[in-house]
Image (cartoon, rainbow, N blue to C red; front, side, top):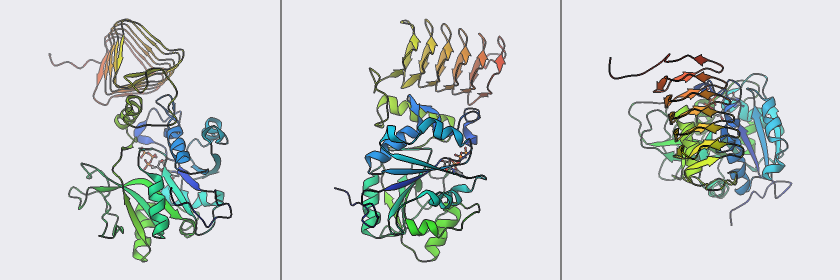
Length: 372
Ligand code: GTP
């Protein structure tokens, strides 16, 4: 039985702030029309996985900190009852950064000053034990308790060293020679009054300002290390991997739609048509109304609703936006295709290429070849 907050007026209340206001620039062009946390991921908006996870960990009420394309969140998620939660929305006219957004969202909280409040980055897939993180936070009466995860290569991240008692000693910027492979996993438990002390109405970063200032002031900032499944889906490669991992069952999610054969090689959503001689594998999602023709092979990819894949096309490790048309024999490997684009027969697109929404690539516009 996990330790629950006991200082709230409502003993059953456990609140979370979800940070969802970023522009998701690394995921463009997918995020031009839709914010990253709402992108379809294994058949549901990405946030559905986080909301389901929060609910099963005891969270009862969520404040969404919105900025970029704020109106789309309420349209998609409503009052949260579909997730067994209450959702309220706090909007930033000007994006305030992670620290400023948390402070701003405090206006929507009901928790008492000494209650724990969970804060989640809106682009993380995680299997870590949030209830255990909460327990540690409450047991040690910490100001903040951060989920830390060990990654094989911490160089692209800031790293977070801890002392023998598990207290965070510093937040170190990215460096080629990190002192630890432990990084900030983007899930925090704050004592509510610590959120209220963040300066209001201005841009602030939790990693660069809020946490270092707490450490300097001698506050208890704890690391909760848990090396369960963890992925930041901020890049196209990671987004595809996260979706595939959910379909393949590498991470369980209570929000996965009930589709026959899932977990398994492919999630084919209602109204999609896959020819009997096509191959769809590697955790691929085939969106509603999508069509995959005879002889096509689609591996480890995400096809949004209404996509059409032509005869004998070869698609791998790619994301294809809504209603895009991929003609016969096209090869796509590790690319992002924007909504409504058309890639004519004969094209081969590889290695991180991105096609903007509505673009038409004519016959053999682009071909990568080893023979000259
Ligand atoms: P990139 O532009 O590709 O770096 O993505 P991003 O805008 O999502 O930024 P980043 O991945 O660093 O953000 C981490 C989390 O914080 C994401 O869930 C963002 O939605 C959220 N976030 C970042 N900046 C803000 C902000 O100014 N306001 C709010 N409310 N959320 C933010």
